[in-house]
Length: 163
Image (cartoon, rainbow, N blue to C red):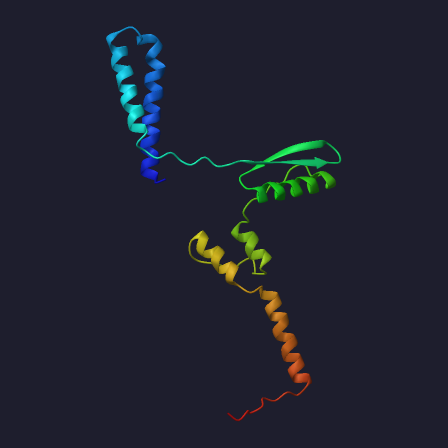
């Protein structure tokens, strides 16, 4: 469903709720009759806008050793089963809650081995992309040093291959 249709549908639903909220006060008056007519028209118009499909909720019963049986709800059966596995693991190891957050750019730079004074330019998304495409600095240095030492040690010379 498009955003515009969704917004129109929400506006109509809000107006209907507003009018229905006033109905007890104006029930017997002329204004009440007009409000009822307006509600009927709005409900008829509401039927012309498509409704968002309802998502099916899957339920999985998971049995735990410590606390008995829990019901896990998810949008797909696969998600529900995966969540049950995670909950089982958490119960087994006494983990109460899992909190995740996005890593900040200084933390990402530290993980990738960039020096603390290394400056990246661009937006935050660009900087994360640069860090993600980078090769861990210390690992690249160690690889190159080991390769050079092996080449020097073995006295390797480039070979000319006839084409």
